[in-house]
Length: 191
Ligand SMILES: Nc1ncnc2c1ncn2[C@@H]1O[C@H](COP(=O)(O)OP(=O)(O)O)[C@@H](O)[C@H]1O
Ligand SMILES: [Mg+2]
Image (cartoon, rainbow, N blue to C red; front, side, top):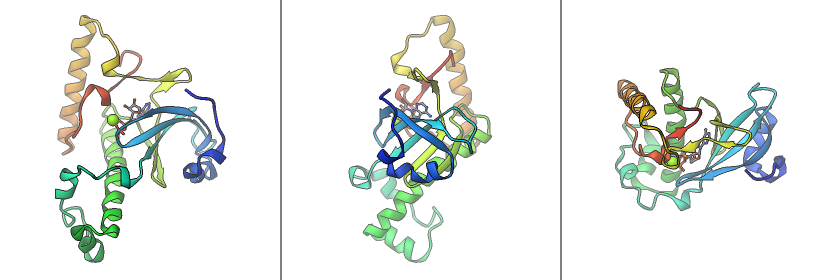
């Protein structure tokens, strides 16, 4: 990870600093398809040593091949009135509505699945395009993505079963992972 930086470098984390949720940004963990993830020192209001802050990218860099989201029905997502019409017409405002829903949904899904006992990071807070969640890893580095580790044959069976148990749990919560790949599974301390 890179060297640590204070709040001045991260205006989008302002609210987390103010609320005592984080004290310091320790470094960039990874830049993904949709977001960049930072490792932060938890603040006094949290009482957790390390936390992950997922910063969503600007809308303009996404929603180019957004067929799945485009097809999602505004009404099914609980929209009514002006937000619904804007969403259907895909106006600028409509896209902002869509974006907000999309981010909020990721946070809600983490909450739901964590409460159900799934192996997902515990969501801690959300504000300004950033989701704060439990960090998987330690001071020396974040957990590895599954595609980057070698696992003994003996250990692979139980791990695979654990994954299938998770998929079943998500299904029981009416959730399907839209992008379940080794890139999106973290391996940490044999789990
Ligand atoms: N809570 C976390 N703790 C440690 N590393 C994380 C955490 N969340 C994400 N990462 C790392 O950041 C990468 C990108 O995060 P991800 O949520 O998959 O974003 P995207 O939707 O952009 O792919 C992950 O593959 C993982 O390596
Ligand atoms: Mg990912």
